[in-house]
Length: 176
Image (cartoon, rainbow, N blue to C red; front, side, top):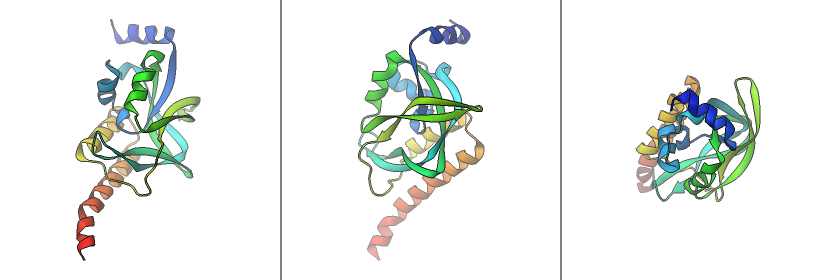
């Protein structure tokens, strides 16, 4: 079955739009949870206005800080817009333990998509926690693979790097 045939089959199947901004931006990582190739579900880069990124959750499974989106009218978040088959909805929910659905509007290629599912952390921490190296790389791999703007990619890199440096230096500050 070719990618074009898969895409046509996807149009006939009940589906939902999903905005990913963290590790799920990477279709290879998303495949681990959903059990099938997800590249052909990618619509492309999208922008979520009125939110900013933050690492306000510690993932027990990954043992590090993981991304969340927080309402902030002065910012926007870049991510990946997917059109996923409804049959994958429960698997996505299982992956996003500690998060809840939120319906948002995102912009992709001069078009606004409404009622797009994204996930937000239910119990936010008061301070950000650094990602580990694995999470850091999978987020950047997804941003690069799906064509997020280069300026945003580097902004994301700088934010994660800053958090890791702060975490590394923190024990020295406590000793003083």
